[in-house]
Image (cartoon, rainbow, N blue to C red; front, top):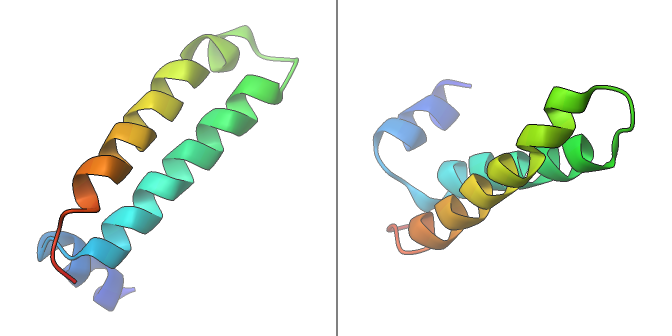
Length: 62
């Protein structure tokens, strides 16, 4: 856990890509659930933020 947090603070690619992938997956799950309207409403924004974040952090150093 501390290695993950130090990677985030050190702007390393691996932890940030994992966080962006989790956001993308969370957005897709929010999009496909039929019960809570506000989750569906914000699903596109969460997926978009995760995708843009993944594109940006793919340029970070290893």
